[in-house]
Amino acid sequence: MSVATIRGALFDLDGVVVAQCLDFMAIKHEIFGSTEGFILERIQGLSGQERARAEAILARHETEAAIRCQPLDGVVPLLRRLDHHGLRLGLVTRNSRKSVDLIQARLALPFSAIVTREDAPPKPAPDPILLACRRLGVAAHEVLFVGDFEFDMLAGRRAGVRTVLLRNPVQPFSHNADHLIASLNEIPPLLGLSDRMGSA
Ligand SMILES: [Mg+2]
Image (cartoon, rainbow, N blue to C red; front, side, top):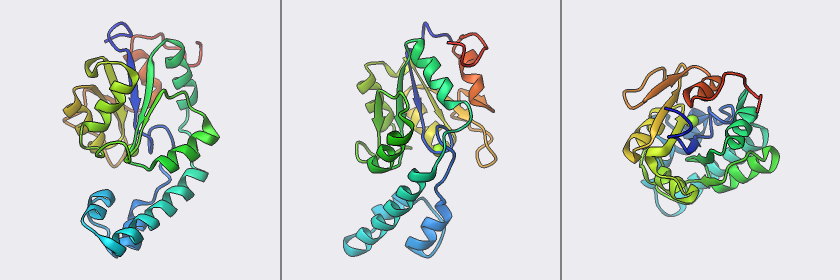
């Protein structure tokens, strides 16, 4: 793989671009009184006032997290470097548009496409990945998608992009990952770029 074949790079937000600030267990406990399952999928099963209450709780947690979250080490120079090399950059997240706007107001990361849960069915559906590819004007097979969770790898595999798992204690491996990395510093060599970070 090299920059000659990869024209776009998509990133998950939480745990990849910014340090994970959302406490999923606390959110689930506050909304449902229990911690099993996944938040968006459980909210889908609610209606009326229950659903409105759940969405308000989630929005409050997301806003608080967006205000205090910090970029992961090395992500800002990495994105600048990929941008400099002409890669089209996008963000694909299950978070809300409002929370991403808050983060972008502070960090102003060089993403040309941002897909949130308002735009498409959320990962692990392939839809948000394919939408980001369309918005960037690149074909799925020309795209690398970096995530830290199985939903990212599944969505990417289903969309036909090349999947990269940023390994972590919760998700150290995935059968749906084309590449496993321990650090974002491994992305430039994966793309065939020279190994000096931030040199571009
Ligand atoms: Mg994540």
